[in-house]
Length: 165
Image (cartoon, rainbow, N blue to C red; front, top):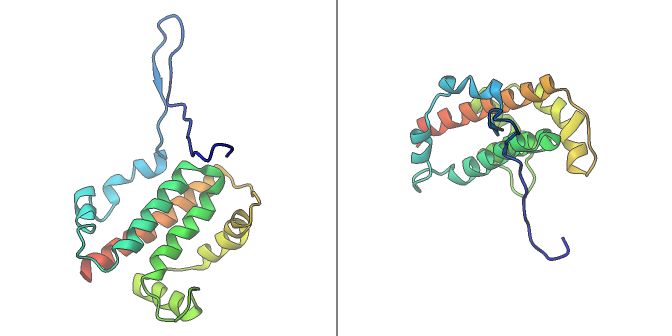
């Protein structure tokens, strides 16, 4: 803050005395990692979307960035999950202006087959407060469910892109 620099400090491993095993801390979420084989596209397929031939490239890039932040920052998970979803919804925007309107959300939900009841609950219970600088409590179970639901919508978005490129 004082110097205008943005440093991160991260503890990634632990070495203990007396020849105890070296411990490496991961950055993943086990419940998401174990479902890797369930993703509809693999890493290489998704990289192909970023070669300039997809009209949804910017929204997918922003969605994946925010999903990574949701994983990495537990206290802001809802904020970043909601931003992930908003980024994808922008791809279906038919209204003018900056804000997504009800008809934009409707098109997003129809095209991807998304039930937004949990999205609105997440927004109301957590994301709005986090966006305004407040913190909310969520259980680990609730956080995992939020991440998995968001990941499912990313899957649907990627499948939609695959069919419409």
